[in-house]
Picture (cartoon, rainbow, N blue to C red):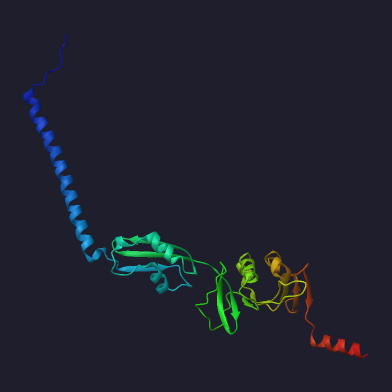
Length: 262
């Protein structure tokens, strides 16, 4: 019977030594790498490289960079690792304009603040002052507007109550194209309907409606107008059904007067 080749101890010793040497070298390289990494970390934390050098704020239109940074408690020069992201986000979101804030760290020393704001639904005329109204019903009283904007409807005759909040919700349900076609929206309460409103449109038509059914009926406005003569303006009544009554011209008024005299 054949026996396997017998390896002597003398032949195995060099191989064992070589294996142990390689293992020791790998361990040494690992320890040295770890040591240098720790040294570099200490140098980084102690050097200006770990201090916030740049803060980038994006996505904000209504809220200013200064107000966002002030609320965040993040400033240039502070250690990037001392920035408490979730805490900063909560503080920024306390601003009435801010819907969501996302704070991110960009190595080695930059901070990014991404902002998502509440949409602007309308403007409120209060006395001689104009203020923006957001989708959450918040009125930006800290930001008085000197000129009347044309990027959202101007609300007149409203008080800061539930009626105004309901109106804002109805506007939020409208497509932007229809919303931006409204120039002015006036609360004109009636005995039969305390929620009655009159709208003046950018295309020259007038609309009579009720807040309670406003978005439901106003969504059909483009279809209604497309069936009317653009040169003959008048009132589109959306309170009960939907019908159109043209404005009386001077000639028609004179004819009416003559008929009454006759």
